[in-house]
Image (cartoon, rainbow, N blue to C red):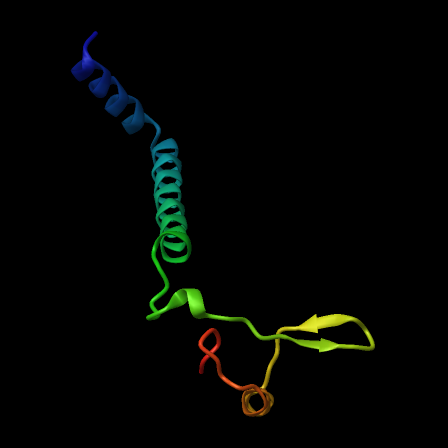
Length: 95
């Protein structure tokens, strides 16, 4: 049996059971869609550089609750403005 005979047998078997054909096609479509979505996320997050002029200079600012010893990720713009006014820009951290 050659490849052509195998393909003919597969087509004949799939025509006899359309339910299996539908399940196989849906499974392949979902697998291809998930793989594409996962690659898009990995490509955008891990493989491509950040779309900023100097991504190595980006910083993350946090506030700390001294009573609970917890860190929150929320910094309001007025709070940031106060920090910026108090800090003196240097060559390492210039805004």
